[in-house]
Amino acid sequence: NTLAEGGIVVALMGPGHFTARGHFILLHGVTLTGGVLVADPNSRDNSLAVWEPQLILDELSRSRHDGAPLWLLSEPLSL
Image (tube, rainbow, N blue to C red; front, side):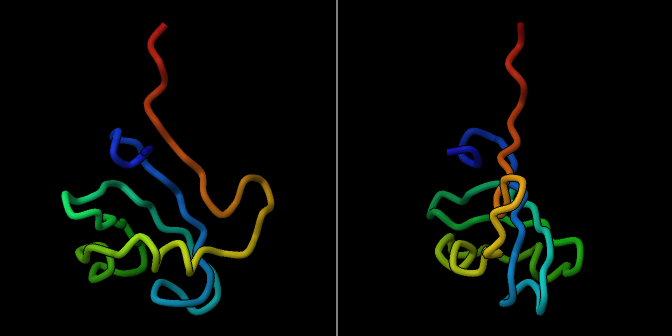
């Protein structure tokens, strides 16, 4: 829902397609077919690809410290 509403998700990734040991990526949108748009500071190719949501969920870090592995960012409500 955060992505569909224009928010950004910071994802701490574990080993897999994005990293061998651990790495942060930004999830910044979804396609009409449900793919996830990624900004990966370590890979232009990853940033240009559309990713399956399940692959991202499967490769999230196992860390649960300080809200990891996902931080949801959205525009603050206007007062």
